Picture 1 (cartoon, rainbow, N blue to C red):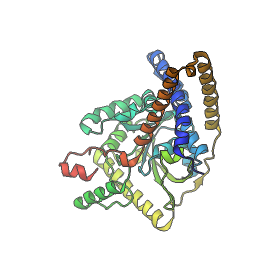
Picture 2 (picture 1 turned 135 degrees about the vertical axis):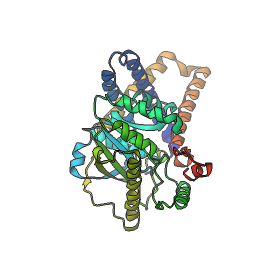
Picture 3 (picture 1 turned 120 degrees about the horizontal axis):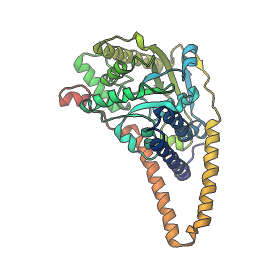
Picture 4 (picture 1 turned 120 degrees about the vertical axis):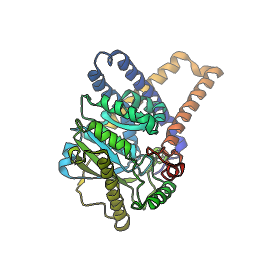
Length: 380
């Protein structure tokens, strides 16, 4: 049964913000003291520390809302997941695609080393954005003139990563909405391109840069396709907090990096063709309710996230109670006002996180291709 958001945002927000700040402090401590001496050691420590935060979101997904991910892929690829570096490309269908990716990464054992290429504003998000910065996420301005060198340096930093990592790249550049689909269809029609129905047109320069720079040490591309049954509302972070269950379908196909063409134009065309195929796949699912032919894999629901949330809950409740007893904060009006202000700040921080995840509030990406303002607007 769904829970009113107002009843859960404050307690869950207090848990997430307070534990997250502790995680950020620990990350900062090791960043300053360990990273200058051994980047390898720092990354191994940070993987464990970051997971103490990310597992709280996994708990929301698995245990609080009870969202089910139906994963379809061949058994050989399923066994390899988490044992190799991989570049992930995916259609950006729902507001919590990133969280679906973290759930699969947690099952594969690489949650703390699941990275992404993100817009630079994300690193300023309370707690989670700061943790991303400590974890070697790649942040971009979404302007190719600035991002070309940013991406190259980011990929170079990952070349000596000491454990299997995933790097996620949403090549559509923005989350799917009907307004953006209409603009993409207009642009495709004006250029004689296949008309998309279920995806947006991929922006390929970032993908080309990733393949060119990383193909020597990243052996695989995981082609991910996300879909939500038409008879349910797509999951959002707000619905997650309300405890509303949902089903998300995910297909993953593995491509060897060596399969891709060598030239930038060839790599770009490979990506475009992949999204034409992805669009047709989703059209078949929408029309025939057939989500491919791959075997469905059992990903279970591990209790690790439940144990981590239980640990944080006990630690923080004990710490807060002891703090109030020591400070006698609630015995004066000034103290009460401080507590109220803290609760307001937590609520505002949670509101920022919720709004940042909403597709209707997402800002379109600046086109990486050079062209007229009309063309850039059509691709937004």
